[in-house]
Every structure is written in structure tokens, then in C-alpha cells.
Amino acid sequence: MFNKYDVIVVGSGIAGLSFALKVAEAGKQVAIITKKNSAESNTNYAQGGIAAVTSQSDDLEMHIRDTLDAGDGLCDPLAVREILRDGPGSIDELVQCGVAFTQLQDGRVSLGKEGGHSKRRILHVKDITGKAIEKALLDAVDNSSLIETMEHHFAVDLITSKKISGQDLDNFDGVDRILGLYVLNEKTQKVETFAASAVLLATGGIGQIYEYTTNPSIATGDGIAMAYRAGVEVSNMEFIQFHPTAFYTTQAERFLISEAVRGEGAILRNLEGEAFMGRYDTRQDLAPRDIVARAIDAEMKKSGARHVWLDVRSIPKATLHERFPNIYEYCSKQGIALEEDMIPVVPAAHYLCGGVKTQLNARTGLTGLYACGEVACTGLHGANRLASNSLLEAVVMAKRGAVAVLEDLAKSYQKSELLPDWLDGDLHNSDERVILTHNRDELKRILWDYVSIVRTDKRLERARTRIEVLEREINDYYWDFKVDVSLLELRNMIQVAALVVRCAIQRKESRGLHFTLDHTQKSERIKDSSLKAY
Ligand code: FAD
Ligand code: SIN
Image (cartoon, rainbow, N blue to C red; front, side, top):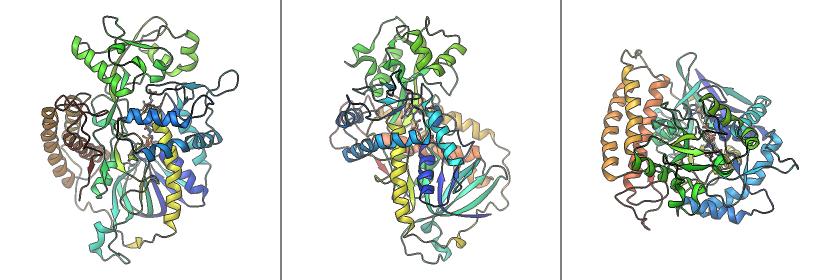
């Protein structure tokens, strides 16, 4: 089956939807392909909010300074300035699109505070900001006649001119460019060919490579793996942000207790009841995330405890109900009454600061391929993302990316009739699916045990050799059987995990989210990490 579009967007979170709306506003036809229901995304679970300078008592320079401080010397100052500067404009557009940010009684917007921010500047919709944004954007997409959304369509691989140049492609001028992609239609279980002049990767993060994560099941790093296989540069993969306060359960996907709760006065205590953050940082419970997560890790290692406590008892009951209804409800279901009980919390893998390297217009190193949102590495976050800067980055970069795509479409060309079909010939369905579950569990444990908050050369080396074995096994398996979603996701997860470990091994220093006991100092010589397949 052959499908042809000007622009294809992979992913329906804040980045993909915002971009599609902008391109459609300019009169272009867009297809969004998304691997589950449209709303299922990291975006949908965002709690704390979106950071931007919107109050008189704040200013852009302070937001810039906080972002640079958190990024620990690796932010690109131009990216920081430009993206944060565009923030308030993008907030206005979200409001026009129907996002009703929570207001105070006097009509001013309610601004939350989170770690590393020197001012209250987080716009939010109670503690379900992501859901509200996702809904508003999906409603707008549904109302656009130029956008077609295909749910349960899984992007498998990019088709580039270099990859198929042996097949006598007319107009091939030696410049590698995007021609389309292969997509698994989950209903028919067939891989279809999609031709496009421009493809935006908006596939989000990689939290699922870790045993414990705040991310939903979609976060398997597909976009990064696809881009890497197509020879596109990825960078800074070692900078995995662990959120300090996920609700402690034995389940793998852990419910987030927003940092905004600490912004309203909650404090961390160890099992002895000591408020320990003062021993680690002068900003105490509102220090940047890398510092808080490491402090919790140290407290747990010291005492052998499985969690620490988050004490919310000083927050007025009315605030808990009005500001955090979602968290309140979740905790009640777990038998925790927030007025009296403390919440058991642990760090969990949360956000990837690196990704597909892009310019400040979402262009990647491959002509016609763009990336924005969590899949991309723009230089904004450096070695550690400042809380609530990611929704902002996604929406700002989607707009910038749309401008670039519209400019580039005027120049691009393709001979799409020549795109080869996906061949799975006489491949059959696997009767060894146990390998997939076993290897997925093993991968997640390896990452959790060896590539976590505190690293060492030895742990990273162990992870590398074990992941190499998993990589060999999955590659053999991949060529022997028909593809399905679990196989494709696992292949991507293993590939992305290998990139995380390679970048971490390269970085012989401690900086931001990469902390290693073997190189505890910063090195002035090491800047961005960068990897390319060829
Ligand atoms: P996502 O929203 O993750 O969307 C990715 C999309 O790509 C999904 O639709 C997915 O199905 C699709 N997809 C993936 N792979 C494929 C494939 N192979 N084929 C087809 N489709 C595919 N950030 C903030 O700034 N503020 C917050 O308060 C905040 N809170 C958070 C709370 C939680 C619990 C989590 C998990 C994250 C939070 N973050 C927050 C981070 C933020 O939510 C994400 O960085 C952001 O939403 C990413 O948006 P995105 O559009 O790039 O990706
Ligand atoms: C949170 O609400 O604590 C998450 C904020 C973020 O990840 O930016």
C-alpha cells in the first residue's frame, strides 16, 4: 500500500500536534501517525506546568540564568535565549487554542514554583496541565480539514535517498534526503510505505528503557533509534533526568508526585524523620532535580531504605484539594490521606535531555527530516533540564520547525513512485516470543542497576557488554520473523540504551545528570557528546 503526503508528523504529543496545526494553518496537508490512541503521550501526564516569564516581578534574564545554572555549563546560550524569549508568545497561542490555565481569585494567572526556578513562573492547569494541553490541541486538530490522524500506526524506519540510491532514483543528486517512511498499520499488521517531502519526528522520550519510570509505555525512543539508523547525529544521550519524587510502589510505571508540591512547601524526610535536603544544598527541597535525586539516592543507600518521605502536612487542606486534585485522588486510592500521612517517594527515570541533534528551526542533519519535543536536542537543557522547560521547548520549537518546513517545501522534490515496498517475503510469525519479554525485562534492569543516578566506569562497562549481547540477539531475531510492535519497540529500546551507555562512557567527568564516582570533577574539555551511525 502506498500513501503520499507533503508533510508527515510522527507523534501526537504537544510537539507533533502544535507543529501539525501550524503547517495546516499555512494551507498544507499533513498526516499525523501515532502508535496508540492520539492522546497517549508523555504530554498527557504532565503535571507541574509550563515555564514562561509572564509576571511583572519576573524577567527573561532570570529565567535564562536559572536554565543555564541547571544545565551545568552545557546549555547552548543562544538556544536558551531564543526559546525562552519565544515562551510568552507560545503561551498566548495555547490560551487561544483553549487551554484554560488556572487563575487566582483576582483573575491573575496562578504561577507555581519548582526546583531551580528563582521565581514563581509555572503556568498550570491544577495538576493536570498536560491533559488540558493535549485535549485543547487534539480538539483543534480534529477541527482542521487539512490534518489526517492515523492512530495505531507505528513508524518503523525512515526512507532516505542514500538508502535506496542503488534503485535508480530519478533526480538523485547525491544529497541524502528524506523520502518517506515505513509504517506498521496495526489493524492490518502490514507495513505500508508513506512518501513525504518532510517528516517531523515528535516521538518523545525513552523512559521505558529503565525498570522504574514516570513515563507511559509509549516512551521507547523510537524516533531517536530511527534517526540514528538513518545516519543522523544524536547527542547528549547520557543526560537522563530522574525525577526525585515518584510514588513508591513495586510497579514499574510510577505515578509522579509533582515538584510543584514542594513548591507549595512540602519537604523531604528520611525514615528517621529528618528533613535532610539542607545538608545537600542551600536551596534545600527546591534545589535542581539532579541534586535532589542524588541526595535521596544517598539517603536511601546510607540507611538501606526503599524510599524516603514527602511531608505535605504543612500545606493547607484547601490548597491540596484545589491545586493537586489528581495527586490527592491517587494517594487516597493508595490509602494515603495527605492531611495526616506522608507520601513514600523514590526517584524514577523521567526525561531525556539529549536526542536527535537539531538547529533552532528543528532541522536535523538529514534534509527534509525535522525533530522537536523530547526526541530532539536543541541545546536548551544542557546537562540537566530546568523543571517545566520541556513543554515550553516543545511548543516553541514546533512553531519554529513549521516555519522552516514551509520554507523548505518550496524547494524540495521527490520521485516517490520509486520508493520500494517493505519486503517480509515468506517470514512467519515468531514462536519464540519469550525472548522479547525476557530481553525487555533484562534491558530495563541493566539500565536501572548500572546506568542510573550514580555511575562508575565498571558499571557502565558491565552495561555495555550486556547490551551488546541483547543487540546481537534482537538483530538475529529481527531478520527472521515478521515485525510487530513489541519487536520493533524492543529493537529501538536496545539501540537507544546502547547510545546512552556509549555517551556515558565517553564522558569522563561528573556534570549535571551524569555523576560518576570515578571522575567526580568537571572537565573543561568535554562539551556535547555526539554519535553518528555512519
Ligand atoms: P510525547 O508527548 O511523549 O508524544 C510522543 C508521541 O509520539 C506519542 O503520541 C507517541 O505515541 C508517539 N510515538 C512514539 N513513537 C512512535 C512511533 N514509532 N510511531 C508512531 N508514533 C510514535 N514537562 C514539563 O515541561 N512540565 C511538566 O509539568 C511535566 N510533567 C511531566 C510529568 C510526567 C509524568 C512525565 C512523564 C513528563 C512530564 N514532563 C513535564 C515532560 C513532558 O511531558 C514531555 O517532555 C513532553 O510532553 C514531550 O512531548 P512530546 O510531544 O515531545 O512527546
Ligand atoms: C513535575 O510536575 O514535577 C514535572 C515537571 C517537569 O518534569 O518538568
